[in-house]
Length: 171
Image (tube, rainbow, N blue to C red; front, side, top):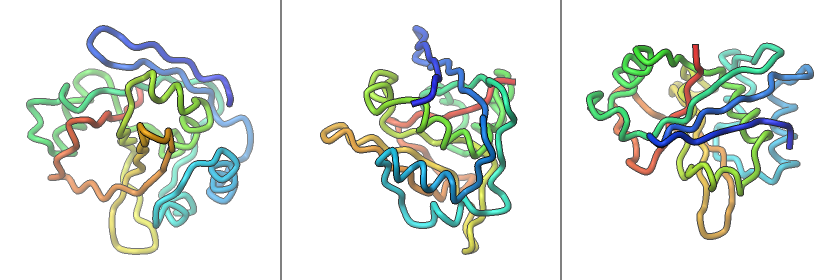
């Protein structure tokens, strides 16, 4: 694991520092890394990681926040409204590659300590080689501690799971 750090505040928001990409990393390299880390991948994840829409992280540390879904009570579960509300707090879309960096930086134990069961990375949607806009979603199996990276077809009107957490970049 590479050195990310995190701290959970009293309001349930997890403040995260991730290292930037320290190497040239494309979708195929991230697929290899996910395999090495033992992270399961759902359908379309390979297409998403190799999509032209998959944006790369600049070199250097950057700050993220993992915010519980219930924080966005006034957004009516709409991804569009959630993003607007997040922007009012100084949070923006993270890079899609942050999903990969996050998985590489933290152990399954740390995912659990952060209280993450469902983590939706709120990057700009990626269109894989099918005509569906998708986000990257981590799911932690609390019984077996399995970590999966799945596509999430979160349409703008989607209602997110109350057990969910949303990942944003700090601007």
